[in-house]
Length: 377
Image (tube, rainbow, N blue to C red; front, side, top):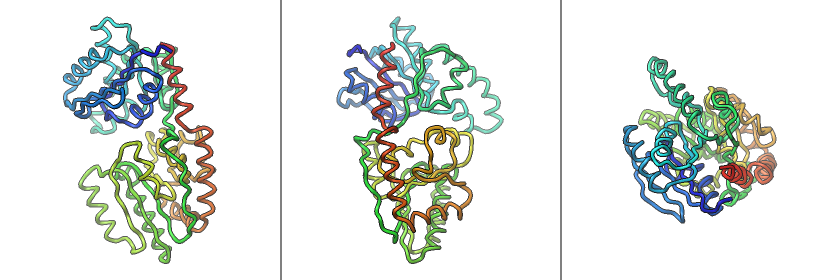
């Protein structure tokens, strides 16, 4: 592999130190001896870490963002550009035309585009813009030289629009040098359950609170903790939690923890005995492979999830936890009750999870796939 091949990552929707872009992709490429630049328009940042150069500018309008990206690309003159979003492809291509460089452009597919954007809009506006966004998808597919995707489901649609282009599945599995095995406690007198993500209804945060409230009420002689890592999306959601919190039993304690950087996550996760996510059963969540699942597995924790087709493709959940109906509070609480009554089940499934992480679901194997993909260009 050419050691001085220069790589740039361009993103309009992620911070510079994004888990996937920085801690996985950029770090691995840096380790392989290639200079890396991460360019983001989401935040203001001018920083250099090791030999990874980070540059950012929180500009709101798309045109200034595009000019900024082009300027930064001229500054680092990359041989390969990875775009984290469709919108990043167009300024990357303009740079290629203006510079006359033999740069190749690649799309890293991590979202269901354009649904991830349209679902946030009013229905009428979304219907009007949908043809435009699909046209941009087709155009982006023509301009890029290849695809990397975190999972096969999201890649399949792009290959329909531009078949035959080089592609690779490079998943989100954790770096085991960060995520060590911390066996869960064996006590049946307490249980600490963890939620990570936005504190919203669709992400399952309030169901998480309801389930623990119900479980604690059924077991007044035991103690329960709810560890929630993330943030509220609105003051209305925060008020709703405060109202729910005022009614919880004395044997239940909630701790809200703000986001931390990727390499600090294990310390935050460590107190948890089990991880639970009760997301809505919609198209996005049912067909997306959650990163956190594998991080908790790497730490040796059982995982409970809303039923998920993407997980079924790669893992038998019964080995490491359970699928549940997120709307069935009492049924979910009954699943958690098993882990309260049978600490040995926590240990068994936690050990299974860690074993699978070591054997299959870790970044080491994915890193090899990424470098092999880069070597083609």
